[in-house]
Image 1: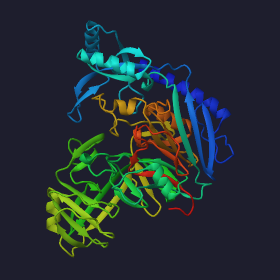
Image 2: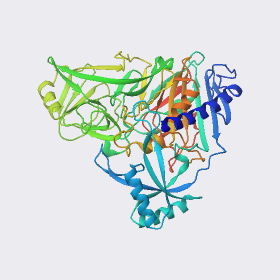
Image 3: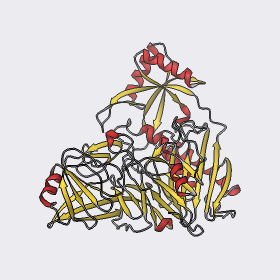
Length: 533
């Protein structure tokens, strides 16, 4: 199929480049190079030995043959299948593309129609995704924007676009940082952390500086708007030092850091939490989030979907949510009931929602039938038990104890040593609605990735994008290929875009894409020297 041949050609080109670098510039641990060490792609690379067992490599990949330019993207106004909201789609069917190109020519423009193919995801169609329509080629963004304004004035949906973000042509600049942590040589710990309060946002570098971190990167997806919950709280499974602080959003990829990072793996995780009282059980559907609001969906009973949908907010009408002492702000208020529990799980009080979580207790808040259950079973002095279970896709229980942490995002990039991107299953694209997730997944963006190689070494990687320092970023497919090139046998995509950040010795080393600078994020992954926790 044409789509498969083109994808394979790009992969062969990348692998050929990697083979050259593997021969001349292997990435070792400390000052010693190893034949089986992960090797970055060809480019300009420098190496920093941060500590025994911790190395950071910084590189810029350049492609002299790339010739990106500014253009005008003419978009198709549609209604999102998932959200019901009006959106502009970059890609459409041939009927739309042909009709739009004809209208543009009638209006005096010279359009071009380009074929967009599905990346080689494991769970989407192959071949042609659709067509896109563009006008002109310009040296500057200002020129493209002026042209886009003229196209829009003629009755089209148009925007300036950089062709260097297109997967169909090679990127000309990509600025990358690769950290390798070898648990056999490193004497410290690797931890996911929310720095003690899940209801706050902090920059990766500020947390790193505060903790004395050797290397830190941003972590999982989190709430960024008050309309979607409490800012800073995670929208997927998260655990810090053995404590589950957020539940899974469907079965999505997670980085499991066992025993302070000495045992690392990537797995699709689910979570089940149940409250018990008087022999009666009720399913808890959330930890440390606003009852009724489920960012990224993925919980049973949520509408419009119980499946994970990236950057979509779903709702629950019957919802029981557990709050832990790590929820460091005022509890959500509104309709429903809450029960305050002491450290032994005994009910201290029952009443209206609000107040704060006691230092050594928990709070259960319920709305709808969950409020009815609390009213019936939460009496002062009554014990309410809470059982928590985390499982991987094989059904195996994932134990959580001291030194264990989890950070999650989506999707899986590498599995069993092969590129294996389950983009649709993890809710980052929708084969039935190509407007959903196209720019997020199929266009180059800043990204943060994590993986583990065959020797058990943790790989933490960032690529800058959105033209910060000229860097264009990775598509999901390119992110997976790059992680595999480093020797990853397992890898996942962490939060990216403006969240992408890496700090070394407490100082930011990459260039985040937000115009305001480094973004305050939810949780982070920190590599801590011995004695720091």
